[in-house]
Image (tube, rainbow, N blue to C red):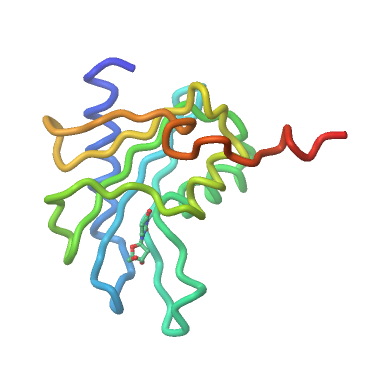
Length: 140
Ligand code: THU
């Protein structure tokens, strides 16, 4: 993916910070999920007083997209930080990596971690979830 495309995704992920519902951790996360056809689905984290129902930004983006009929994804950009200050990379949690494994090719799906449009790193799902369990493992 070219730099311009990555920078656009970073901006879209950062835009989501304003919508985060994170009164308990105060840790705000934004995500922008790019489909293979070039559509973008955004997401923010949504916490809960009972804690465990909390939904991460990445899963919010995936569930929005899948619920609209999308199944083919090429990349996700994630930004986050305490009180919405984006000063460190926010790598996806294990559950979000597993959700990515369900819908994405681990060899090609790109995970972009960013703090701003000039500072980012791109990883492949296979590197962040080595030997992941996915749909292929459950086929007969
Ligand atoms: N969080 C995300 O939204 N994505 C991640 O990958 C890491 C964690 C959220 C969940 C919770 O609302 C807050 O960050 C602190 O864990």
